Image (cartoon, rainbow over all chains, first blue to last red; front, side, top):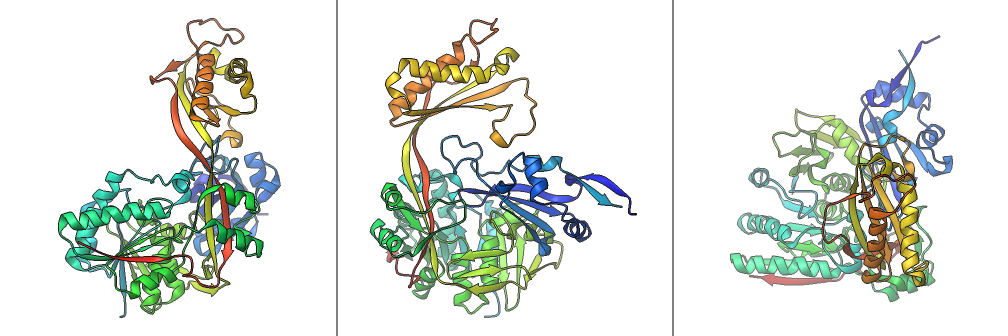
Length: 111
Length: 449
């Protein structure tokens, strides 16, 4: 049995960010430090819609997709914006701060 | 021609760039200078009323530097999505600046202005013909009513209108709304380079040095037959495999399938390789042609906003802010009963959940918070009146348990209420199928100076 240990996402990644992708969606990017880390996450599907919905306290349907991108050792997922871009109630014009809940994600990693 | 060198001074005309880095780029003998000037990121007001993303003085200062290089080194300059939204009025504003600088400086330059406003009648006909679809699953279906409501609609042109202008050998192109990589793709593909690599390099360089580590402004891209390389011109910055891969997937809903006018860029098989300390080589990009669509972007006026900004330090007030917000709405309605359902009022509470809103999961509250009151109403006058009543309530409302009775907040500005002007919403973000990529993008040619 491989011993698993809890690791914070911040220690596995070089980039965690959010940004507008159209006036109606927010896109989130997670780039891992190296291929080994990325491969382990991908093999175990360790980051998925259920985990992300739980982390952001939203319905699973709000996590529109979770896509693994091998060439960048990266994961992208999308959510609808809470208000359309720059409408009444706008809080983050560029959606550049919405990634923050990801900084708390802890994963069980091998070795 | 074995190689093409493209110089991008910054990711957004008007955002600024170090002149010394730009001059370093010019010393490398680039074949073209390409600079993006637009984005939907700064809000629908840019389409809605033609206001520009940056102050006019910023555009003029940068155009002065860029046009000097065009004049002295005979390097063409392509500006796309002029002014922020790339609407006709913004193309004309940038064109006037270029013309005046040429006249003042004694430069003789030829220019092409490419327009991107789409007449509503054409959009209605296309909608009735079933040639319009939502651009993305979060976008509502388009209706004739929403087309009527839009003040202005632009479309993102592909590379073809640029190629048309390039064939006329102009020194300067001032294009309206364009798919961000289009001017670079047009220049490279017109010279016979691989479409996939051309589009991919365009996608990365349209943001200037945002792809560098740390990010900078001025970038040099070099395309050859089977790859391209990227190099930042700031000595403090480098490109890394990670920084370039990261930028490839930046602000797109899919990391490696990038649909655009006439085709989809497929980056699932591309390779990022570090070739020296500062440069990254990219290869393996693919481009798959698709039926030709152009993306429509439109905005409608939804009213006028006013705001008040206040600081709160008293913990009793901070914990009562939700109660005070309800009291503020009540106070406004008590004074203006005829305005029921005619305004929207909201407290943004910075230091609590101001930035993440409903996505905030950390319930910690800071020792002091900033309250920004936002009011939207049919007229500026009503918005400011309602905002005033809300501000008075925030300042003086007798919330439960109040013991500091002279005021609930610290205000920083007089006037206490600040009118914010027109408020727009995006109401068109749709794909329109077209037969001819150039049909809706007329070009006017000029000779300046």
